[in-house]
View 1 (cartoon, rainbow, N blue to C red):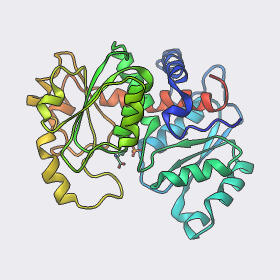
View 2 (view 1 turned 90 degrees about the vertical axis):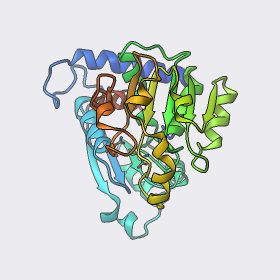
View 3 (view 1 turned 45 degrees about the vertical axis):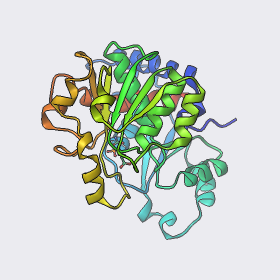
View 4 (view 1 turned 30 degrees about the horizontal axis):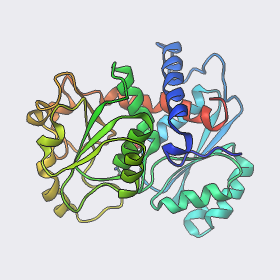
Length: 308
Ligand code: CP
Ligand code: NVA
């Protein structure tokens, strides 16, 4: 069976735990090396990842390319607008062709149904590099960062502030799989996707919704936010007005535990969802989090190829 990674549940909690351990070990083993040097065991030697981008990206694009290089393989970037996909070739036919030419496909797109369609017609693994619904690779890096900074996942209290977006959905999904809780501080009308929330609750996770940002952040182990206006979203003015009370600033961080971590998937909109003082402050681990996109995705890649 071809392993796809469209959402965290495709792997499940045990595999995600294995990815975190693998990522820590591989990261430690290449400490101080030049970034493009191939890992000693080159576990994906000869493998090629085709990456389709229907939306902008800095981190996902570079981290997957670097991950493939470090694993001994390589990557090809396809900007959708310059491919035949951009002129109407179907997703199904694109899946069939890329399955003959590459060993795996990563796609960043809008509608989650497109990635499901791609996976349905691909005979090689398909990886979600962000859709409007979720961003699972980001959350593997986030969990790795939290664990690396000494926090155990079971029982962790994570506070999310701002928009109920794709990144939040994957955090909520991870909560159900890894046994932590999420307090969602979000204005009415911008709530989290109930499909992900219901599943996480059914797995025993405590997911609470707060209309007061301080209530969400109080006593949290980890504080997370993201842009108020995701790629493809309109209504910027109304979004900013609704979410301004949910800004992560020093006053808000002071309500979390003294050793709480601050996470942001980036890109950040300084002065909107987060202030300079927080993102550049002592509790921020956002640069580790960004680097960990490489290490986390190496383990995702090893998982889809059956190596974990
Ligand atoms: N966090 C993240 O996915 O960044 P990019 O949009 O730059 O890929
Ligand atoms: N929620 C953001 C994440 C960017 C990495 C977006 O979808 O634009």
